Image 1 (cartoon, rainbow, N blue to C red):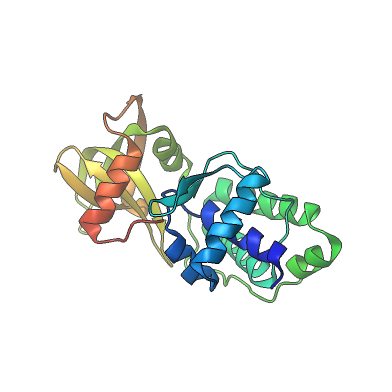
Image 2 (image 1 turned 90 degrees about the vertical axis):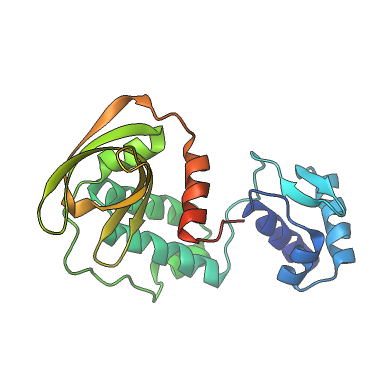
Length: 228
């Protein structure tokens, strides 16, 4: 690996993280020495990279820093194309259209050789049976805007109830879509199958706690490791 490739890999490793990461962890991930990490970070800072931190405390790439023009290796192209193809098949109508648009935009700005690899990727997302029919755009909008959601919900036996919830995440499984939320009625986290939501009305006001805080609490509640 050339030094330029190593520096780009280091930037990518920092960009993936939202919290400071130690030089030791970066060294293990990139298969280099800690001394090399310290030297490369000094080089990147000298070239204008917005890296904050110091030895012993960890490093973080400040938001807003722009990486060099789009360049991907073979694995990154396959991950990108497969992920967008997956969404294009399994999302609601708006997400499917957005995924197709993103894939077209990305491939359009790739250099010729990389564009050909993206266009001819051998990784396919298999069609799902049954296909999703619910429009999830209101649920996604409530999550983005951190708004209370009033829903009518049917349980497994068909009994309907009304709930006021704070939607925090939408999980896409093979044949189901699950909305994770804080339920005001139960005063606890609950999961709702989207195909059992009979109606959903977005409130005018945001719920009282930030979604990122609720999401972290939900992860701990469910035993899901936090993201770096």
